[in-house]
Image (cartoon, rainbow, N blue to C red):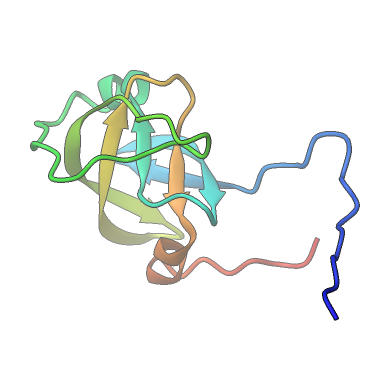
Length: 116
């Protein structure tokens, strides 16, 4: 017997999970994303940290809607969270406010998700 399961649609805005992260000496609010395939930093924030030299991208990325993401390149930033420093690679995009960090990176920077 085939069974079709439905999930009730959630209406309203779902709150973002954001992490305060220092990147190359500047504080940013990074959105934690379980669906993203990489760490992304908006071009405006890349400029704020002094436009570190970008390396050529070796692969391309798609948005959730399957559109090609416009990316300028990648760089490795020095990040700090809870007084721990870690190098993290970011891809720079000209999409405003696209500042995502992979959830798997959070394990590396000792982030602990508390109770809500």
